[in-house]
Image 1 (cartoon, each protein chain N blue to C red):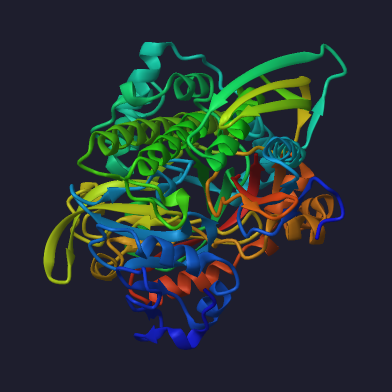
Image 2 (image 1 turned 135 degrees about the vertical axis):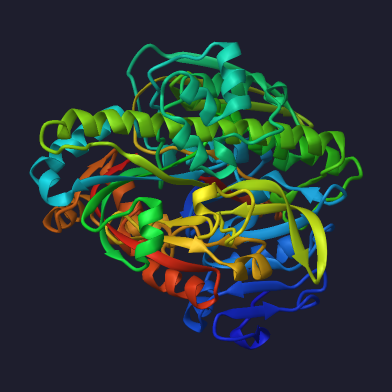
Length: 137
Length: 484
């Protein structure tokens, strides 16, 4: 049992980084996963300007949607040097629309090469969704 | 599936087997090159389960082989080698890895450590400046679309044509620094965009530039041919295909999932999703992977040239000959079409090596003429505080491991545990006390890469020598390290 309704925690992985993530629903799981991944990247955002990014994604299954969502955030991180601290995710089946708010990156200590599918399986219990994410670093 | 040592069949001191059928879905055996304690240690994480997942893939021509620097990765374990029948077998981007052609290049000099020691700090600073490393770094050029395509087709040869190196650099590299069959048209726009400004950069994580000194020669004749002399400086570069390669793997793992979902083969671990090598999807990935591999070869070539300039800048006037001559350039994460004898049958296969080095034995036609009698150089970096090794591949590697060997020490401690148990600032001081100049992007990143997080490279090397995969030529000690 987790002490919070939604959240994430780093779990041991010999070479890479792994997160356990949980939330009451898929939208929440996507947001918690994004927060956890950005936490691992150890980014410091500029106070201004505030930036907004819209995302439209579709995937054949929930796990692929999660990987695609996080991969988009990584791309903005590397290519546009921006990251996010607020998220609004809405889902229509496996179609995602998201608004991400953030700012330019002032400093970043870590880098993630990719979000993997390794052991990726979104499990359901009566009241929550939970998964493990492994990132190649 | 939890296994103990008793599940393994032992063949000699350094070879252990999990026969086909150990797990019901397993199609071929999994063989570990390891000493008993190393195998015991490998049972502590998910490496064995990941190897069994790979052994369940269809199209394998022989056993899945695991090197002694094995540890848990994603999909296929680090240190894994699998041979897929060509062209009807599979190719798995996740079993090759995101950092396509992550590899190591070694250069050697005739600069004596004693002559360079007073300026080692300056040399480390100059290398740090010349070889951009760390998060979000860009190289000194933004490639046009045509230049990027040329880099991805020509590899290191592109850099040499720009005056950044010599033909000797190409001779002394796996594939001559250019992997044939690259198809840059298979790169997504995003992959091309990510690569455009990253040529000539090291990256972060476990990538590094390291100045070493030759502390021991174990085979004088071979060392002379390789250009390694006692007490002389070396330079080692560990990096890969940067964001371009990461994006290629991301794109194809994603695309292959969709195909698998539409009735294709869905492996137990989705990271091992694959396509038949003779399918359009398989050929597209092969072309893109080779393009990324060439980007990586070119990246290490340019970094080597930038490092040469740093050596020149600091050491010219102090020593007579500053030149850094190429020893060899090896790849770690690759899928290569090769011919091997498997169960007495000559078979064309796509050898997936993930965190493993090709280690062809003497006589292999792909080797440079002056190395052909020796066998392929195998470069085994330790960690930033420990020795590295130069070996040469032996005939047994062709018989046992599809011409493969270890690629490093291999991690033994998780990054989170290393962060908890190692103080980056203290580690930096400790290494300085041992005469190792260190430049690091972040202290927490340094802690994650601490020597304590890695296996004893000496034991890994002893194992591959004991198993007959390689023989030792020289031992190197780090004196200056630039970490991303």
